[in-house]
Image (cartoon, rainbow, N blue to C red; front, side, top):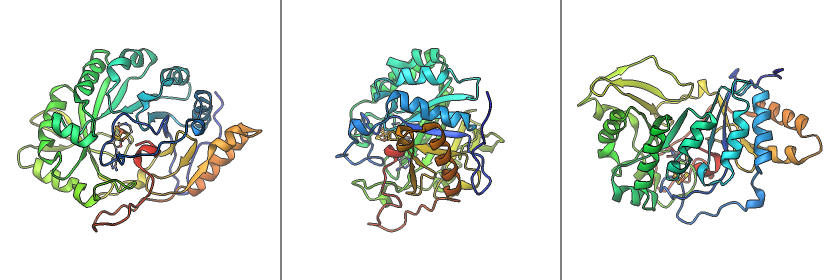
Length: 334
Ligand code: SAM
Ligand code: SF4
């Protein structure tokens, strides 16, 4: 493969990681992610399977090595397996990793096929193991489906990482038992600070739990050994001596990590967002549907690199404040 010009932004960061959203729809309504009454995009605005493939290919040709499929909930998109099959053709030929982030409600149906396609690792978002808390948090009764998904994925040989958003009062007391559960099953767990993205019913001040406080509290009972472990993302890791497992911290509010940013995000309608914490975007769909898609896409990717901001500025301090960014996480693909 002839590699075209790599994607390097004006802060000299090489972009090798694409998060591609395949739908803004979801079968859950997590209270920190979505509002109960979300208006979803009309289907005609959403990129077709062929367009998603074409777009992903353009990124791989410019040096993207890792693609994470996200959403909304990626597994609610019917033709997702066909897209993954197509993209897996690039594994070992530019693409090093094809993976996804899922709420796992439908994972038991797809785990085997995902492993056959060449997906090796999956991130599962799970904030509680308690039925009532799950229902309150996601506004749906689906914890047992999620747990079936975890079982099926492990049986299929997929390596799993659990992502848990730390939420004041809601799952605050459950964090140690979630970690023990994940580590007991051989899964790493990463804690994430809630970000002020999109209007939701609750005030972000009532959701936000700084991970500095969580860490202090975990250190009362456990030994957190710093380790030299990196996955190319914003998480910082420790090993918990007592469980032997790995715990990650993604702290967009208390510990800015933008200097090492290696990613961009593309929505299911083909808008590229250069930063999760900014509203600037470029319309790749117009390029895809125009007369010279290949060169138009390349030009837009060059502009995207020039426009990628240095860092995000999230702040959750005052009650009633508008979100830092009006777009929900489910639009950009978390
Ligand atoms: N539906 C899939 C899932 O939940 O894994 C993929 C999309 S979801 C938007 C991706 C990740 O974003 C999840 O781990 C979710 O917990 C996280 N997330 C959503 N809204 C968030 C927010 N406001 N702050 C921090 N994380 C958020
Ligand atoms: Fe859906 Fe994921 Fe958002 Fe929850 S976090 S509402 S599962 S997109």
